[in-house]
Amino acid sequence: MKAKAKEQPKQTKNKIIRHVYRLPVEDADKVAIEINGTNYEVINLAEDGVGIVVDEESAFAAGQQLDAIKLQLDTDHLQLRGRVVQVSPRDFQLICGIEFIKMGKENEGTMLNFLRRRRDNLFGGK
Image (cartoon, rainbow, N blue to C red; front, side, top):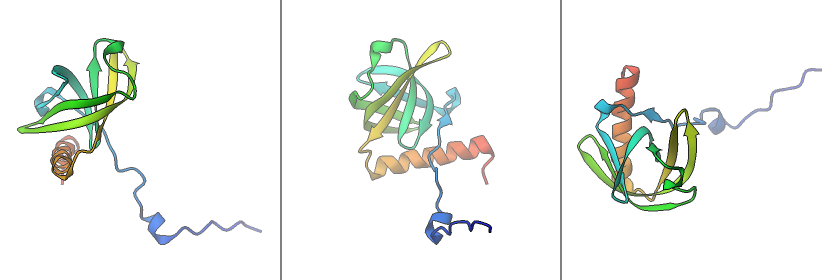
């Protein structure tokens, strides 16, 4: 006797499991970040966070709250708060992952619009 595949609810079948993506940031993207008055190189960007390069492992600690983040996306400037998710080595660099918290609708919209334009440019658009 063959086992029947378990029927999943209709809403689960059509659900997108992962809609978060990180896009690499290039010099031409005009993306810059300042945290507590210090500028860092941005290596990737997602709708809810950013990856930056740090010089010293002690610069940030996992769980650390960041209340003064200024993020530039082209001509838009966002004032954000965040939390350090991780600091880890990659090649000969240290990468710090920061999750944005309480972004607000306007900042979320600005971020999503930037990511959509960047993704369309990267993958050829529609």
